[in-house]
Length: 317
Ligand code: XMP
Image (tube, rainbow, N blue to C red; front, top):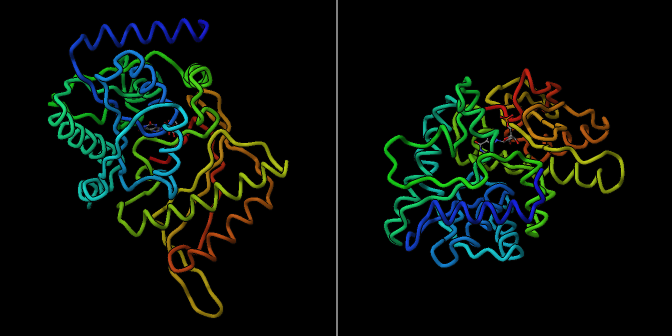
């Protein structure tokens, strides 16, 4: 890998070439490492000609908007929050097919960005796409594994010209850039652009998002506490998935018939392959007890996903 400073200079020059003055751009930033690095590189390149937009899709983890604001603040990246909660829920109503869901999310992002760009006169859209995103979205003559919202999920007739400074880089390279750009999220686990929607199998509704948000917080907090106590190493990614699969349970002496939460913890270096982790059993049990207790009106069963990638993918959709 090239040394990171010269790589950053090269990326900055590339953005300047792709967005010639006085052209204006908007950058879609999610607080994740890829789009934050893409935003910072583009900000260096374009300065006042760039506006960074962070969309609250309503599909974020519980404390995400606050956490993301802190990341941008610490990284020195100016941004504007756009409220897309109603739009995303509307566009996802009745959609259950994973690829249709991803495309609907990609289209909703572009709908919002085009509205915003019309206001500022921007013609370019900077995205944090990295190599595995377009490889798995069917780039380079490969089969489409899944349409990443920022690649295969883009509508064909979009007006904004897409600029992807990190397109040829892999996650470990982006992590080195992030460290050198002082991005505080450099060591955080990745979170997919389509958010909790690809972890909610079946229809995405406000209630099901709220259920998964709570289960996600329980998983993250329980694992992070076990890691802090030295009981396990931090997984590459760890999260909950909400399944539309109902099964019979019993509470006291009353029958229940509720949905299922699956727990996923994987180790990986670049997300192209991953292995399911063997966490301490006590950690899994604590997660299961908390989820079934706190979400007893919606969930009565918790399962652990022991599948590697391949043959599975990391996310369930
Ligand atoms: P999969 O599920 O394909 O995920 O094994 C590989 C890595 O990519 C993340 N992921 C996404 N990231 N937009 C993103 O920005 C997406 O559409 C998307 N889909 C999956 C996933 O969390 C994992 O780290």
